Length: 223
Image (cartoon, helix red, strand yellow):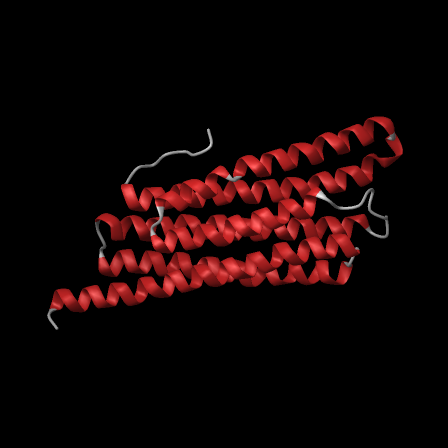
């Protein structure tokens, strides 16, 4: 194997490790979102604290991916699509780590709520969580497969998330208008819904990075 082949093999091996870590951090965040809604539904302060504590591992992986990307650029000097893929990975891992922060934000809200009962049964918030998790999982598949069509499809699902968020927002605002004593508990649920809506926005960022890697085009979706 010649020098060029050796360089290519090294790049492929190191980049594959980056993708594996991206999938690992995705799975941790997916689990955190799921468990945050479970802690909210069950008013489980112990679980909420576990989610907050486990965010440290998500942060650790984020920095590991960023360092690996910088090292790969410095040592392998990738060009064209390879360079775009590494730069995109650096951007994507930040968005996924921020999603973990949003899941931890829901857990922190659970702790703030204390023993106060939920204002109303959870209906649309769990739906928002399931949609966010699905979008997150699919976005990494689209990135790894370089699937522009799938990326655009995932980004279009943000409209569904926005509709769910608006439904939650409108209902809770109406409750607050009619029951001033419920303002605090309604605000807690609004915070949770907002965190989920922001997760979907960050998934859209990942979809934009997929298009960037494949086409070189930097384009904002869902404007």
